[in-house]
Image (cartoon, rainbow, N blue to C red; front, side):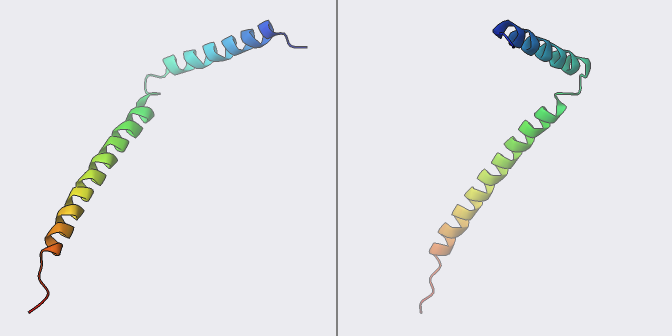
Length: 67
């Protein structure tokens, strides 16, 4: 039966091996960086579109359609 120490030792070994594999590949963090930059660019694009839509709707509200 597993004791707590055996489980913790296994978890430590697993995390250590994972950490070593991440340190061995310097490009491993590139995907995370790319995701963050893409998310920031998407947020900026949505903000810009929101501002443009608000200005267009405001300008369209001032157009008179009557005689």
